[in-house]
Length: 289
Image (tube, rainbow, N blue to C red):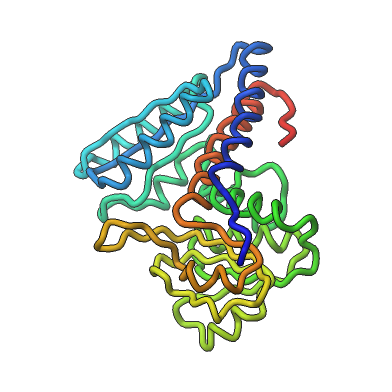
């Protein structure tokens, strides 16, 4: 039976460190880390996610702002708000909650955010720094959280065979780059990949982010592998499941994340981490974790 990687517990311990660092920063400089979220339209999941992020930011003593716009908002208004937040000394992190209404160009709007405040790591400059291995850029929160979970299982990642299933800009692609930086051997798969079960069986670490409930079967997994399930899918019953068939996978894997309670809490924790790092940079203070 696989070890269950408890993302909730790991995230709570990590946030205690962030809280101490935030208090020290405010005591030394008077700067309170500030996070602003832009939510456009009435997507119920987006509303829930922003509320969760805001609540946890406030728990750490951060300043938090939510700016809500109707789906028909004009581009001029959004541009003006992003410019205002870029210039605000009280805001160190800015995120645009995705998905956006279809008429809006998410890549254009993301490119307007000051790269130093881009806590989702989606600005082209930050993505380019990650691609080239240049330090100092913001890295997307979910891959950072996944890497932290993996390191609770593997003391050293060098030389391990890592499979990343899913090629999104928010998870799959940056995840693969992070694992390459750890000197892993990395392969990526997607909806057109042939003979996926055979590929999965080669992975010492399998990271899945495809948005397809229980798609990865337990007998595809290498015995003893570490499985990081990023997916969260709501079934007609109202229950949530991952992209991996947990019940069969846990009999093969050495360690596995549950859904919910695995990657999700770490994503929010690393959003707060990135916001705190941006505040430290604004204060011209070294940030060590």
